[in-house]
Length: 269
Image 1 (cartoon, one colour):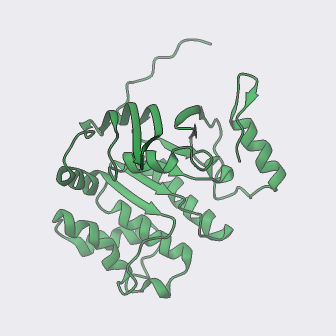
Image 2 (image 1 turned 90 degrees about the vertical axis):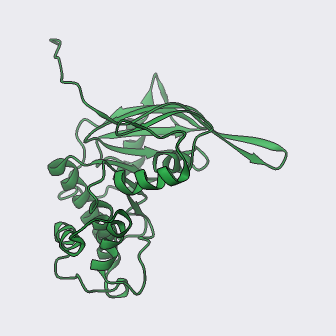
């Protein structure tokens, strides 16, 4: 194969030597043991691993909700590893959009007002217009005044996605975003994420236990015991518009194929 020179890209996330240790009584529990990870602008990445592997801790650090014990972290070119809580809150609001499994919507607040909230904190002008545009982008232009109780689970997650996008962040962090949805709603949400990534080049990171969902992304990073054990590009990501969920046996075979390295398949339970 001929050598091909590709243009340099900008790393939205660049972490080196990240560790995280918690004091538990008389003991120190080291959850992350030296993570190096670079994620380029426009990438679409899944982070997977068994319970206790460090996924949630890594996600919290990437989202500036927790700080590492050691190591460096540059977010969109800004060194954030040792910032004050005040400065982290400002960067978090401006640079990161969050989507959670449980939607995290206010019960008595309309979809439009939900999406306006991040802009209230940042002092953005023209909030109503921007919130409306964000909701229209996820197919909820006719649901602006609806409360969460008047929306399906899939529609509530779309509100959460619009809220994550409205400040035009450098990064979207999604924690099990399809975990509380039925198969049809999950596919619809994945279609939105894929469209945003393909058309707007929004850098997106999923934490998921679902290998089928992971195959809709462009890259899968596997964690085990606080270390990255595999990092693989998906040559042909599934298209959420057409892909149908396989049987459990087919899903297991697919996962083993994704994580097969050096003659040894990663155990995943």
